[in-house]
Length: 127
Picture (tube, rainbow, N blue to C red):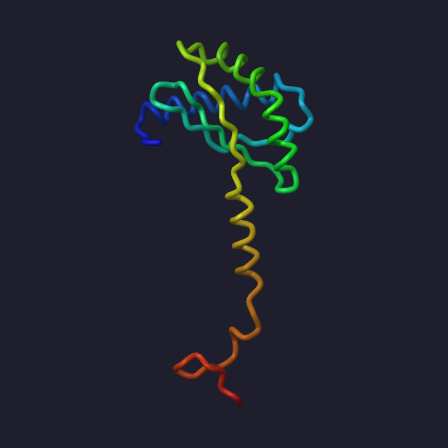
């Protein structure tokens, strides 16, 4: 969504309130150790897309936990934000941390052929 100073401020407030709700008001064990990585609120505040990150082995259970707790989270968020409209919530798993880990691992696992002398066409030179 398009960002300006006001929308960034609204996203920041919504993220703080939502993180507080998840930390203190929701007791679902499937939602423990979940980090709210980003929040995008639509211009008319009718939709909030929430990006959460967790361990890759827990993606499905976290999605099920959010599906069960979505209405309670929305109700608590409506009271906390005190906006005219309580936004509909869409929870998405943020996999960027996992992708960064895979890239980091790939950069550390340098193939043995990288240090072999090569000719101008890229073929190994037998010595």
